[in-house]
Image (cartoon, rainbow, N blue to C red; front, side, top):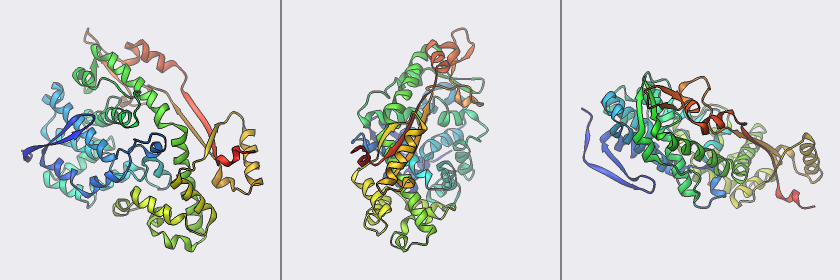
Length: 408
């Protein structure tokens, strides 16, 4: 039997009301330094430059994913009756720990490092960390099981679907949480209805036909959140400028510039090799901003200027690209004014289709349990989903450049 707390811990949460913790292993993981570090990582990367209340952390989101996973294994009868106690704890822990590998400003930092955040998450869980020790104390095989859920290799695919499927705890929490903290309404959907209508059939999660309309709302909420929040041009500008700043720092390192001796916090990430979990732990947004504060005072004019722009929100302007000539013209104008296009001009393209069910794995599909007992893929049961699948994907191709270039 897995150790329970002497009394249930309840944490207030604006999305879920309360987050309930009654397992010692979950409580120990929450209080580990690796999970506590997530309080120093914003959930939404550069979106805080657009939505001033988008200051919520990866920590809050991770607790929310855990809570939805907990509710799934306790409230969905098919899961409650078919999953073992170890599997239930595994999926709850995976929900809590799935984002441990994120760097500062979330996905934007991955352009700086050689490893993806999923790989770093796996290392933190499996190597000598407080999280690893907490999991081992509960069950020696638990770290491997949790890591397998997160990297999609666990033999029980239901656990993988709960954390990384179309109707997963991760997406359902971040849509509701991001909508709440940005003050938008686009991400709202009926979580309660979806949870009430989830079943398990043929080793996969399905939703009853009566819950199909809630799933349609969920998919549309995701689509609108991507274009109104996650792909917002100002947010993308900030993230593009982060990448340019670190590109400049890498160039300075190749030139053996003494400037970087004054800012050692970035060195491990500029060497082009895999960083250790300890080095990763030390790099959070407070450390990053301190590095930018030092960098703005350095003698390299490009690095200093880019750091200043990031700190002061003097972000690059953007416009849609329709022809290659636009890029060439902007590049020539930058050179005329003494700007290096390598650091003052960048191209960013985003594209998205609301629902893409056929991508070579069942995790990309939503399955509907029809009233006659048959199981259909969502676009075969829903006119709305079918229209989304067969419609064109939306894309946005932009170039970013100093707003001074707008002035003639």
